[in-house]
Image (cartoon, rainbow over all chains, first blue to last red; front, side, top):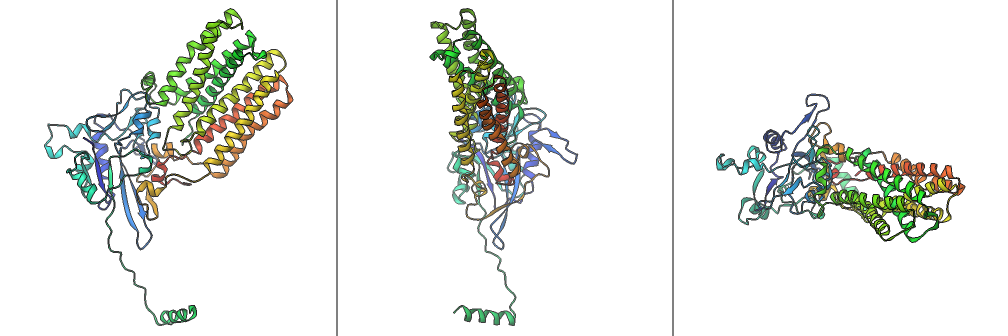
Length: 229
Length: 309
């Protein structure tokens, strides 16, 4: 199995719901509290496993606002696991989920340096590295109804722009989405082979911009044409 | 990259210590006449142990959960940090054995002390190499992911080691030995060349951009919103940015203090001034190591669209 997420950049509206649901679930999950520092002060800080950035792609009038949620990509060649000196970071054989054993981490930061996606954040209070667990404590919980055995971010997404599934199965929903919508990996040139895939926005007709026609503009246009000849 | 002071102290001090012990034992084994003195070997050997031990202790200060530091020996097969830790500890029994043999038998070599010496110098070199590979193995940081990184660490380690060795020898013998004097000069010149090549090389644009990061390779991409209203771990660790003119000034200061001023002091050949040269050089190398971090740009900055990328 190769579990991971597909994020549809066409439908994500950047509401930060996935990040909030993630924090709510995981702060009492297997990797312990996700601490905040001065959360109600002028300069709040804290540990999050999912960050949403907003970009403007292209130039007006052909520009598009794209919201890009980023969490751990559960890379197939996870450099964060390779560099870890204590063995706290590991990638599970059975489903490819990358996890940090909080009891072994010494907080050297090296895995965060090795991660190109900013997926790992050092918990300032606990002193250990925190990262997305793909809600490993949800997706295998047999006490939950089957439809709820999904990561918290996927369940909460109001636009259903996040899909969870097995990338090894060619008929899974995620594999089909990646095929049909030509899903993209981020920073493929680094060769980490991230599992999470992003569906680029669909091409939509460009809103036409009509220039106001006036007599003087029309005459100017004619003069310009004559002069260039 | 945010320069953690403990890591700067660690790499500079342990680099100088490993460089010193490497040159000392090598010189002793190949029979450089100035280094066949029991007192000199003991003083230089213990000095290098102090430098190395202080460096290693400083390195543990940047751990946020040091109670698990003992686990760092467990991933020798894959992690350069783990390899560095293993070799750093493995070094001690050999070098202590070697110094003990010198203490008991004088500088005359026998089979055992020669073997201990060879092992110590080989492990010292490997440890220095492992330290540099911690940084050079990170594909996420273009300025580190180069063969120039280990070359820099090794040459600068040997350079500060050769200055230390010369200063200690000159203090004990009242006049500097020509061999060591020439060696220090050669390493100062090599260090300056190697560092200049590095500065030239990192100035060349290459690698990832915000376009390959976001996957929109056919259009211009601008960040509208970082998604958080104040700095957190990512910005503090990777967003560290220094003004270009300040970087330039520190580069000049680092080149001057590390290479030029020690070389000028060396020409005076006064034993007391040689000790000064060592301290000036170490201060310059601290600035050099600070630059090594401050000028390194992690790819996550493309997502965050931190300034000057």
